[in-house]
Image: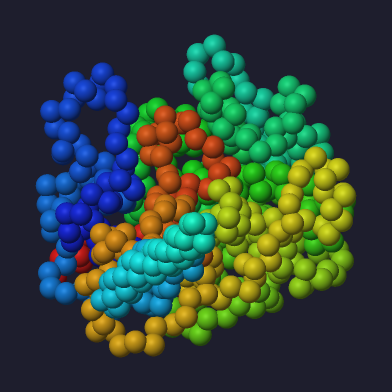
Length: 154
Length: 351
């Protein structure tokens, strides 16, 4: 259980920030919290560790939570199936709504960038085509007006 | 006993003896169930703790309670938060700061509100008489011993099969002896409820309430409701869960890993995951940990137990603590069912 949390949240600074946001959201702004803010970073660390189920005594040695070397699936005994299933879900994720079209997939992001690039150019090309059609329409209208004026000329 | 509060009605040795070892009259039982003419169903214990802040109503014979806790957690358990000094606990009260108190309250509530209810497993426990509290607890002790004796390498079987085997191999004291009864119904109802208490399971997969799983009520729902107890339709899924194994705790059916174990998980990182479509959400269901739903949410289990609240006595013991601590030294760890849930050695994290 704890190793799964270490795997997800304790290897990168960005991930630790996400852990803090999820497990220990900011404390309410009270006078007590304001005056006891001297050790805020330590207290925040304790709160995050506690709410993740780790002993708060690890606060000064929390870096030791991370196993050395690569983490492989065989390190997990009990959540192996869940982790493998999660990886598979990430691998096969596909956008289902228009909004999700703009969310990159997890693997093969190059294809996503190419698709977005193509989409942007497609939109520009479509707009260009639309502009051309409008221009032709306007041109035809102008031509008709010109013919009408020529016909009316004495 | 605090000064000026008087001696509570239940602190009567004869009443306690009758409730524990029989024969208790229906008046005795009503007296325990109600207080000041009001129904005391559900928060019997917490109400007393919260409103009057006096000792809890404790009915179970002390030596038996000690034996039950020792059977569940062992005598050398040092994991529970015994943060309240022994001198502050009355000789007749339970330590509200201890996680073990949940298991005792669940046992007592089960006997008072289920076993002693005429609409609960009446064909098994008896229409006219009901077993005493000690008889039920002794059967629980037998059940603990039985499940504890199951070898962890045994091929997993459905819980209903284990319960049928348990019933066939033991002569249970709480079951009626005057008439034959339906053994299947006993396994799928009363004994399943007993197991849920022994295993400290939540009422169902989606509930924050404690055990029992409420499978033993008589099929006549109207009778159950008229018994002033509102019980929803019970889930029978527990009976089909395999044991030993984590399935009993409501783990979903996840496809088994087909990949080799040396697959690197470097990319399984929160910041990378949040750069895509998935977002993290907390859950208090251990079985949902790391599961993904159709809204692209990944669930993470969070211990919901509030230690400080429990130490202050401001906690409802009819709830489930939804904390791994309750399984920390649980005897069923021998069956590898709950062992891994909480026994994490910090030194194992560093390689």
